Length: 180
Ligand SMILES: Nc1ncnc2c1ncn2[C@@H]1O[C@H](COP(=O)(O)OP(=O)(O)O)[C@@H](O)[C@H]1O
Ligand SMILES: [Mg+2]
Image (tube, rainbow, N blue to C red):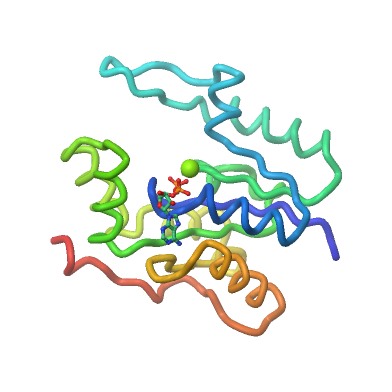
């Protein structure tokens, strides 16, 4: 199999971290956790309210170093993963979750009402999917609704899409009316 460098992105709570681990196990790939990379290398600035804002050019530089340093397959996960270099990524997976379910997950994670609402709206507006398609073109982007899928099933679904057995072409999800 040709070397794959697969980005896994999506709104917080859509299941990126668990999906990436399941996929990497299947492919015997290494997982790069972008949040950890950003924290370890301190490539962020702090907002007045204390939130970390990643330095995207530095994140890209660190990622290209990591890709050069390791020759095997890579799964890179994080909500900025779709902003990594087009030439370094072979596939971009965007995970989706039904807003009602996402809301529950984020509240359970301790997110405030406001922060939960902001993320649920971003999910309903397809923001990350749109950014991913704009940056990488529709043919490289795979959209998976994980609302009713276990992470391991979602990973298998993606592998079937790679084999050409199913289509995960973006545009099947529409949650606007549930939120607005
Ligand atoms: N496919 C899924 N079905 C049900 N729960 C899930 C699924 N994927 C993730 N979760 C749960 O949702 C929460 C967020 O998952 P996580 O992988 O941390 O999301 P992310 O990395 O996108 O923020 C976790 O509690 C996880 O166990
Ligand atoms: Mg995560």
